Amino acid sequence: MTEAVLWSLRAHCAIPPRLSPYADDVQEWLVDQFTRLGLPLEAAARDRLARAGFARYAGRLYPDATEPDLRVLAALFTWFFLVDDACDGPGRLTPGQIRALRDGALALLREGPRWRHPGFSGPLRRLLVQAWREPRRRMPARWRLRFADAVAHHLDGTWRESVAKAAGRAPGVAEYVELRRATSAAYVSYPLIEFATGRPLPDPVYHHPALRRIGDLGNDLLSWFNDIASLDRDRATAGGHNLVLAVAAERGVPIASAVEVVAERWRTEMTRFVALRAAVPSFGPALDESVTAHLDGVANAVRGTVDWTLESARYPVAPGS
Image 1 (cartoon, helix red, strand yellow):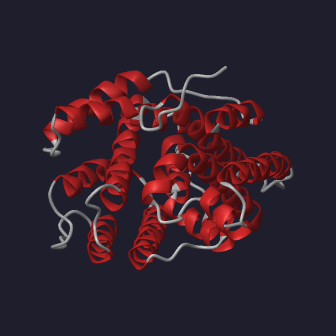
Image 2 (cartoon, rainbow, N blue to C red):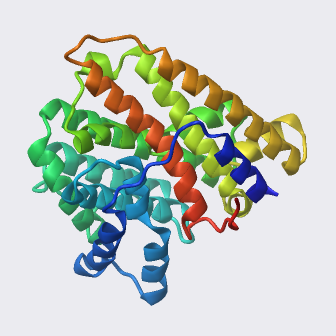
Image 3 (spheres, one colour):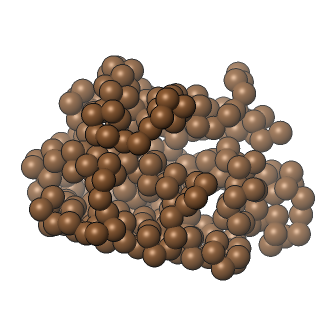
């Protein structure tokens, strides 16, 4: 039932698909990196990561990135997915361990690789050191701080979700929507648009209310689509942390009805996303091209998540039309 809904939402998505011509080559490079970085992967885990296609995901979000930059982006995406698995998979990290991981990652991002934290070491640290090297070298300090702040927000959300799960407390719909905006890592992907395009935005423009509304809405669209795709898994492991589950509990309706409620909300917000994107004001000739690149990047994050979710082995969705 959810598979038909997912394909229906894809058909309703008004954003055209994009894919980097380097995506498959970078995917091969990425799989080789798993061994070089000493990631503790037996054959089955390595195969699962390879079939997940993280480089293709990065290639859908940043289709105009150069091949070297797409390698950086794919490595960063892999880091975040490995962290997600560590925090939400079998034998997941405790809230205290997640906090230590957060502190160590932020020290590295803000202060550089010479800073170490006892709770953040090994392959995860090595992967982040490698992936962060080029953005740290090339991007201005204000951008690096903005990216680190986005990572802090994401890992804080992951920690809050872990605390709630440990306490057996399921969120209501409004609380979940706000928390999901942190746990999705979409806000982490937005600064990377500037890295991929070479068009960093001034802080007042990046945080302008019009751009923030579109960023929030893009985050909701990709997060809610993912929630429908991961519903079967989340029913067993998420402790109510899924929009469909939150809607079903709050309204007292069956899961099937809640899926339809979430899908209809997604369609409504997709229409609003298109309208808000078209209504963004001009920021002047010196900035409008950069603003357009940012808005295109947010749109690519939505459509890229839709398409990657339907093709990735990470989500067992049957082929559709």
